[in-house]
Amino acid sequence: MKMTKEQIDFFETFGFIKFPQLVSDRLDWILEEFTQTFSNTDPHDGTRRSCVAPFIDQRMSTLLDDPRIEGIGSALLGDDFNYMGSDGNYYTGNTSWHRDTYQPNHKHIKIAFYLDRLDENTGALRVIPGSHRMEDLFGKDLGEKTNRSDLHWGIGGEKVPAYVLDVIPGDVLVFNHNTFHSAWNGSAHRRMFTINLCERYKDHEHQDLLDYIAGASRFWIDRYYSEVMMNTASPERMKHLEQVMANDGHLAALSAQMRLTMSEPARG
Ligand SMILES: O=C(O)CCC(=O)C(=O)O
Image (cartoon, rainbow, N blue to C red):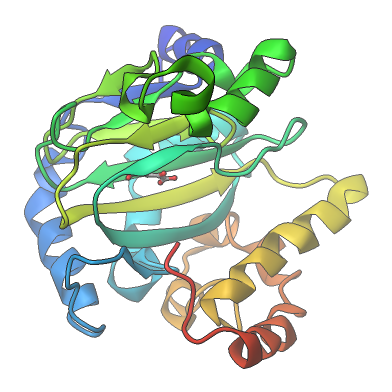
């Protein structure tokens, strides 16, 4: 798949884009593999988010090879984009306003697959258009105030002006990690998984790459990718793994430290 120049421009301008029914042909497989992956974990009881990371690495590594995912990554990040991990989730209730990571000079994107029909009354993702590029006073206000909107503006988080991304299973949402997003009024069993991608890091950004990888220690993993993801990689997939594989040597020791201080792996 090739994104059109209008789609690319829309994404760069607003910080998100929706592809209706992009993976509808693989939906049955995706739903089955999602369920199977969670069958190896404690059952989701609806009281807290359940999370598996990395996620597609467990049973859906081939999604990374799908021409549509490859096409989105190449169009937005260049042909040599990096796969930056994934998470699978049962969300419970609201997710308040946040950016994923704030990276002013390095583009990270998230590809999100929601597996339930969602609208604004049932937990659909909301984004603040253009907020990925707002580093002036407006961006500062968003950072400080969206999470205390009742205090600052006298409204709840769900009333903050935003664009609601209604979805039906098979749709694919893509957003810049810098884009403010949230979800409100969702059930206690909202199914969703992500694939994260970023531009390849330049030599002078080496420490940033190491720091980003270090963040995965909260999931108690020794390598950034699963053995299956790495061992089944074609030369084409390997292009998207090699930079992280060459730079995740510090992860096992960091994860060992996390096991000493956390009672369980992070839930997101
Ligand atoms: O759907 C949600 O509840 C939030 C998703 C989200 O915040 C994320 O993937 O970063």
